Image (cartoon, rainbow, N blue to C red; front, side):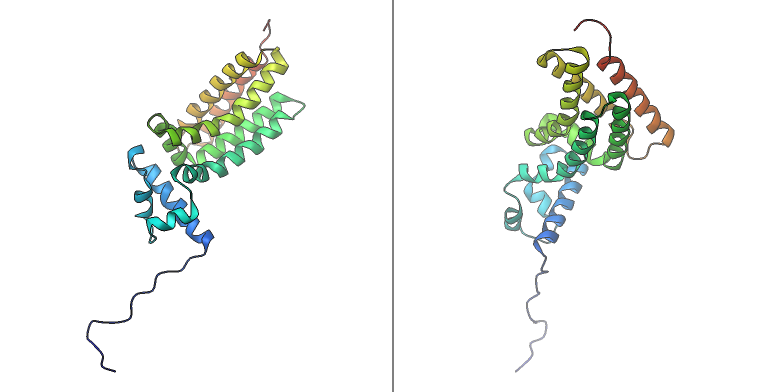
Length: 205
């Protein structure tokens, strides 16, 4: 056999397990979402940050919407666990304080991603669905508490709870990814005081 200079066997593609490929795509998606405008968050942009093809994307995700849901899914699961303990607690004030503290720490850990989701939602319907999913657990428990504690009707209770949940997000996102312990505790205490005064407010519904 005669060797030909500069010619060798074709390069082998890196082989990944399905889980590894999915993790790589999710990591690339997070980089794109955190680093650009909503219009830049495309399947092509995500896959350009991997060594995989656009076709491979559709092996693991049905569409961009499913990708976004996969990004925020772990965060929603954390929120659901926190809120469940709050919703079922005998003392809603104490449990609420614990839940708000846990939520604050979660928002700090994921501050960059959560900011990207929140601020991109106005310009992107699929990101907005992810934002709504992150608001829902807190809105739901607030609605339940307002019905129980103040006897409010469903529509009014949900409206107030949604406003409180939205307030939470803005306060916690304002902390950024590296607040001091004092800033974190002050934000949690302020939220606790607002929630307590609204949910347990005396007077007629």
